[in-house]
Length: 81
Image 1 (cartoon, rainbow, N blue to C red):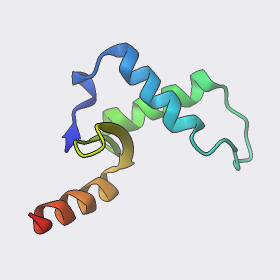
Image 2: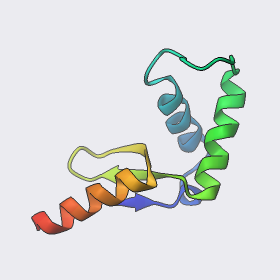
Image 3: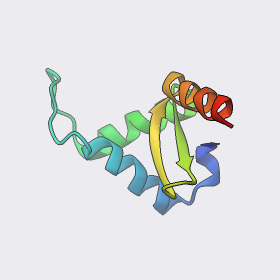
């Protein structure tokens, strides 16, 4: 289920974004960005709707996905029910 990012507390959103940013552990881009810059980039993507926050009730966890990937998951979940 997609959760509007504005419905999440500031602290929880910050933690979720930082976890998303550091999940891979390695940067492969040409430019280095600070954590604050990366957080800002993710916040802009959330505001534009390019990425969304998805809550999985089975695992009681939230993650950030592209809108496309979230739509595929929701479609698969609805067809499984």
